Amino acid sequence: MPSRSFSSVRVATAFFVLTLFLGGLVCAADQYEVARFQMVQEQIQARGIGNTATLQAMRSTPRHLFVPERYQSMAYGDFPLPIGCGQTISQPYIVALMTELLDPRPGDRVLEVGTGSGYQAAILSQIVKEVYSIEIIPELARNSAALLKHLGYRNVFVREGDGYKGWPEMAPFDRIIVTAAPDEVPKALTDQLKPGGKLVAPVGEIVQQLVVVEKQRDGSLKRTVTIPVRFVPMVPGR
Image (cartoon, rainbow, N blue to C red; front, side, top):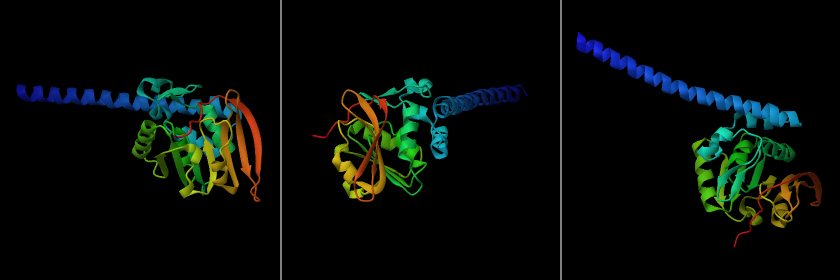
């Protein structure tokens, strides 16, 4: 009898510890979910972003998993964060704004120049058919590709390469988004944009503007400047 009682106590103790552990995981998950919903409401909707698909993608994407562990508690703040290799993940509002300006649709094939952490690609993947993302920094390309695959974003295709050249073998694209700043929009990218398509990019060396380029049916380009922004420079390949 004493041995049975001791065993029962051990089982009960183990169950209690496991319950606390699982409860802690659930609690942490709940906290991130609450922070994510607050982020969308207070930082994004409050600033005028109203596209339903964009808002839903921002609510459902675990931004904290796209930043280094030491920054995860700050992942839903109103600011960019370092992701290594001298690069950053953009402020949530800017991600949402660029997504809304891009106006992605369910059947679209999108080219992203500058994969970074993979967060913008994850957002777009929930709205469009396919995302083709180019990253010039090998470590970031490998890490983001592995993370996106691990998280189940099966319609995102990442490769290491020179964003100035685009992805010609997969062109043309319905939409193109650039997440680093060139001095001017590269011609190779507008050439790979379908007539009727849109390109969104930060443009400028010192003073940067967020620009929307619309390719008309006759191939001409209509350029609209929106707001001043600050992005890391877009680096050409060697």
